[in-house]
Image: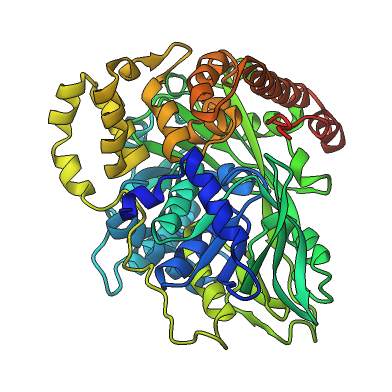
Length: 580
């Protein structure tokens, strides 16, 4: 089997991956078992697998179904951290961003330009300007720049670049560059990259207990959520990358010590690109009293956010309230020339940031504080947890946690992920050069071609091979023409999609890209998935009904006033049916 074939997360391949996990016995344990399929867990599995270790990765829902699919979709250095004087973090994030742009994931991460408006001519230009100058200088130390240098914009030029800004309030601006990505697809590609290097990976596989030999953790007992089967997976080292579920997992393991992680809710809305005039691929960043406001160009719409409020309810029931949406609209309207209304909102999504709390004095004797933003800790012998951090620095976090877990058993196995690209990157520049011929062959316009390249990189050849076999798959979805029928089929055959929601929410992003949140496309998408996953009509009906019920609950939540109310709407429903 080739590396590329090994990376495909096929329906048949899932059984093989589960069999390999099941075969990790006390006599033949895995080197590393990773619990949690967000960006940190997927990154850790990829890192460990590229070191030549035997690796398992399990996730109770779909890949990136928690925080890692609900971000601002930016790979950025963290300009606001300069205000906190956290120069080390910013320098690290900028290095990682540039590595992704230029080498390891140029097909998944691309530059984006931001305008930072000034509202106090002298003070803002001096204060913000000096901060961005330092931000840019840190990108030029010891390496070639990956993005252009910043520039100051006078009032007239500012309105040329971003006509949608309120020129009565903004007196000028500064233009600078960062980068953006599709967060859910990025995680899925990391999982495929781990599988390409022979990791055994399985979504919809829940850890129900941790295995112990004395006081040492020696793996986990897991349950296949599709069959209900439980089995043991033995491992020399277990890594917990649980995000906002970290404490829940530590308690399940019976750990006496551990990381304390609180949840903070951030929501985003989407509106049509036509609603806010601007030069293509240019967004806005500005500060609010509680957080940062981003107005981010994304495909045919804008992503606008975010909020930053404590969430004390069930992490699985997170949702946006009416007040959350109004807050984002209010702060966007404070800088825009034409006010947005609730009628302009196409979609809404919400997620939870895992906020790592400082270790108390005397805690964590077996821990290493890696940076101000993330911590690695041995919560029990054989069980290492990681929490905190930024999406942009996931690779550093993965390297840190794997290094820590292996410090006594495999100290000579160093990380290779600085040089090993994410799947789909190899040959990407050549594919970009040939994109005009590719577009002509398949009849794609420039927008669709660029969209496909950004979603798949060189794996686009595999998607197009499906069309070569069946030209009808080149037809766009009737109720979601941004996507081709071939993309749905590929999501099931190669990207590990097991349920309708996996495709509508994470392999595509229809839950916030269209006003009906993907409900109209549900029947067509489910019909394409059914033969691949062996669904009969009853199963198709359950998938569609579950998704529609989940969207109805989210929409109902968006009319509520409090977190308690929105959680009460969402908690009783699931985006996927119980298939056991």
